[in-house]
Length: 221
Image 1 (tube, rainbow, N blue to C red):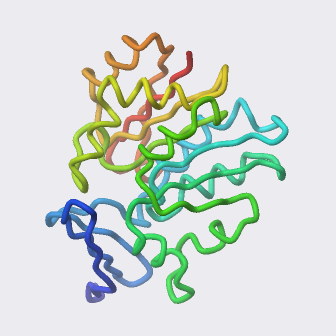
Image 2: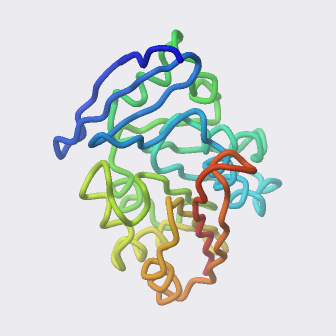
């Protein structure tokens, strides 16, 4: 087994340390001694975008929001589904995460970020949502491990009732809202339904046919 290389470190606004590692051809980001994300497991992140964007693949000028860049798998999947005139806003809180993806030495999301349809904002996705009432045909949120915030404590507010209401308000009529979670979260699902949303729950393997089960919540008014 090849040595684990430490490639970089970033500090989130609340002081949380995020560390980028590489082992052979695989990249990962660790927080609090736990692997937050890895290029070895991307199937559920891609499926999140496929489910959220399927209904708008032929919508002219569709506008979507991706909350949390990660390694860009959700963004890349959205770009594969959406039409050539779509616009995709990516909100990423930690600028180093963007820089790691743009680094030509790392085969990450650089190509997706250079797509003319993409606008990257170094900002808390909550700020983007608050300023974007009625703006998006689809919103995909993968800012943490789900409602159980791991990287930044303030992420949890997106999964509380006021955060859900703010996110729904940023949708256009008939828009879709999709959340990634590392596990089932009945309390969060109940909050979504309590907000008057029709919710579909999909469980997806991290590697497609194997690996941990992740939970995707796709909701619409």
